[in-house]
Length: 63
Image 1 (cartoon, rainbow, N blue to C red):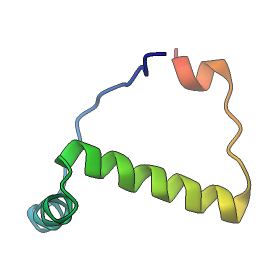
Image 2: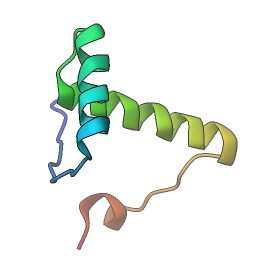
Image 3: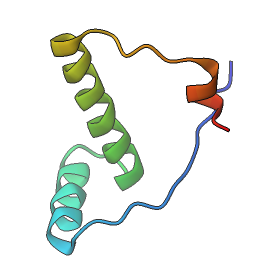
């Protein structure tokens, strides 16, 4: 099954951008993949500490 993704503009200061780029290069990832991986890790950490984040269809689809 295809994964549907959304896109948005992300603004980073130059230092954070350069550091994430270095991490991505060290892990053989693109910047986009590295940022997605970091976000997923943070969500997993948050849910481990606070419980699963419950979402509705409206949360996912938006309106």
